[in-house]
Image 1: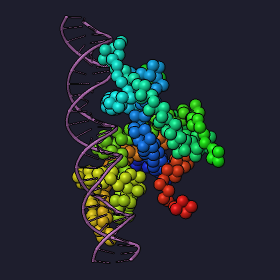
Image 2 (image 1 turned 135 degrees about the horizontal axis):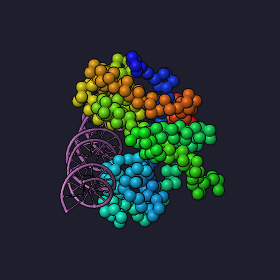
Image 3 (image 1 turned 90 degrees about the horizontal axis):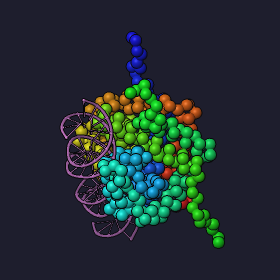
Amino acid sequence: MATKHEDGPRWLSDEEQQVWRTYLQATMLLDDHLDRQLQRDAKLPHLYYALLVQLGEAPRRRLRMTELAKQAKITRSRLSHAIARLEKNGWVRREDCPSDRRGQNAILTERGAEVLAEAAPGHVAAVRQALFDRLTPEQQKSLGEIMKIVAEGLQPCEAGADLPWLR
Amino acid sequence: MATKHEDGPRWLSDEEQQVWRTYLQATMLLDDHLDRQLQRDAKLPHLYYALLVQLGEAPRRRLRMTELAKQAKITRSRLSHAIARLEKNGWVRREDCPSDRRGQNAILTERGAEVLAEAAPGHVAAVRQALFDRLTPEQQKSLGEIMKIVAEGLQPCEAGADLPWLR
DNA sequence: AGGTAGTGCTTGAACTTTCAAGCATGAACG
DNA sequence: CGTTCATGCTTGAAAGTTCAAGCACTACCT
């Protein structure tokens, strides 16, 4: 009797249930929508586009594999396959890391940068049309706050890492 | 000069950009999180779980394939493969539709209902812990409204279908 | 040195999703 | 009837993702 448990698990209220289903539908529809748009206009899936963006913003258009995986929130394995495909398309190339011989840098090629520049406007327009144009400024702000909370709650406890009471 | 175009495409402001990235991260992290939880606890991906839920709520635990696909927001093809796998596991079975010989009903089996009942509490707990427990009631409400707007903006114009000026 | 553990990245197999046909039925029209 | 077109669902192959090893290198400890 020391600890207290919820025997009947706390179910979702009707309102919560409603919110949750709408969330699932909306995120699924939006992701599909953007995937199709990019596949049509730029011949590449959303995630791959995101990788090009990350590389394009990185200091010398290059990033260590692990770093890129971390930023894109995907596994190293997945990244490995993805970069393999982007490399085959000539949009990214690899380079051995000088300082650590285990390391690889993924580098956005000139051709890759062009593809990115061509795809970006259409993509931004799609995001606007599907999301931002439909929301009030307050809703945009609120969405940002909510997503921040969710994201931070699911990070593998890295960022600050000032949790010495766990080690 | 009759119509006016934005030549330089309207970019995203810094705030919008921030919101958008956080959204992408949060939705990706949450989806991965739930997928893993279900894979671990119930040996099945999130989408498949959702299909069982839909079937479980349907009138006689059965639904026409196309109807199920529509509710779950996925293609008929995808559903076809998915049901094939669920059928192999013995959680769903098929039945020819009496009224339309082209039709198939997907039916939740007894075994399928059990799996669902076992998986549900853990899943709900995960959703709570990752989402609802972290948000204020106002934020929950706001999230629901926002997602409703987004979802409705992306539906293939079906629901009301009171848009005769398009036909 | 040698041993051990951890990091960085890749690989192949199994699985899921998408894409483009395809088959069968139903509905409308001559 | 016979055509034609839409609907309901399936299929196989290609593309993408995950999982479990695996290889090579670094860091640390003795």
